[in-house]
Length: 214
Image (cartoon, rainbow, N blue to C red):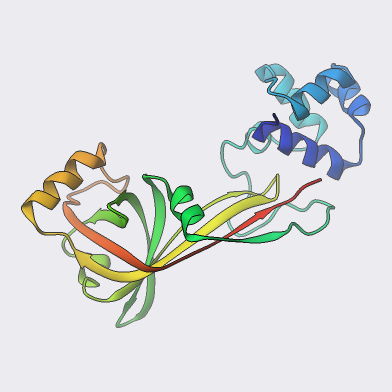
């Protein structure tokens, strides 16, 4: 079984045009160890991880996939063929959304489209989130809105995106609000008084997945 780290390592090594033997020599390991990192569940120490990143002219964060290491909107250039694009069915979309995460809600305003990041939950098939009572999102209740969530790994050239479109409504029934508060487990990252719950019941749920296979 290959780990995400193993896939990123293989992609970067292939893009650099070096063999497992050459990479091993650069970071003080042998080809068998590099093969184990790429193909199995072996995990390197932080020292080896740092030497691997240096040998591949990248960073520990990029190799480990812990956070973005470049300006937003700028891709990481590697020499490889295009990755295949797959259409996701509704079941796959719901599975990828999970039960909670970070997404973006897009609404129309008098000044044009507006997009806001939110902490979301999936409750009874709907996408729910909290905001303040005087926000753009709160004022958009009763209109059609779009919600998008994604996971992108630019180093390994793989990721997915799910788009939900539906009516945005305020959740105001006392029993419903109690259930949502119990399901939340945490406060929104934005902080402040965000006690106004909104829900989007998707009438269209679509998604795409892209994954490079070396």
